[in-house]
Amino acid sequence: MELAKYIEHTNLKPDCTKEDIIQLCNEAIEHGFYGVCVSPYYVQLAKKTIGKKPIKLVTVAGFPLGYSTVGAKVEEAKKALISGADEIDMVMNIAAFKSDDIQTVQNDIQSVVTVCHLQNKKVKVIIETAYLTDEEILRACKICIDCEVDFVKTSTGYASKGADPKTIKLMRGELPAKIKIKAAGGIKTQKQALDLIAAGADIIGTSNGIDLLS
Image 1 (cartoon, rainbow, N blue to C red):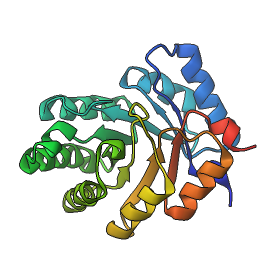
Image 2 (cartoon, one colour):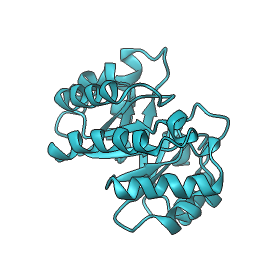
Image 3 (cartoon, rainbow, N blue to C red):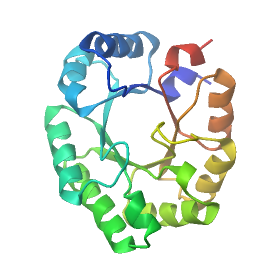
Image 4 (cartoon, rainbow, N blue to C red):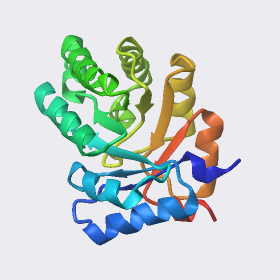
């Protein structure tokens, strides 16, 4: 297994600098990572740094809490795509989900999916598994299936807990093969990454990409 191809090299820290993002992109190019994940503010810089290299440029919408309006998420996605993003990691409206306002949750996800798919770009939906029971995780996955998302992602990295193999297996059992899984949050060692991939993860989102290779 070539682990680098699974890694989405990430820096979403609020205090990261332009130099940090340039370094992130150059490391992704050097090691042949799947992609980089940066804040919307840095999409243009990352695009310029990556150039024509085969590195996916990923950014976020409704991050990290998910309860911004549908319109706000759609605009974030549109502007990110115009700036050069290949994939959008949007946070599900967890507040609406917990309030059993499923129509709002579906509209939220579907609206961003539509914008991205019209541009042949991909969407990952972050369901923030730390806040959900197993039953709720399955329900969130079902909504993602109905909305025809490209990936379901476990975590933002800002909650109390990130990805674990048990949750990945639960998600993989519910999701069809065409919907991939991105594991994220607290992945700091190669063993963690390999265990998550073995459980069914397709992509590893981590700010420790270099460490995972050794």
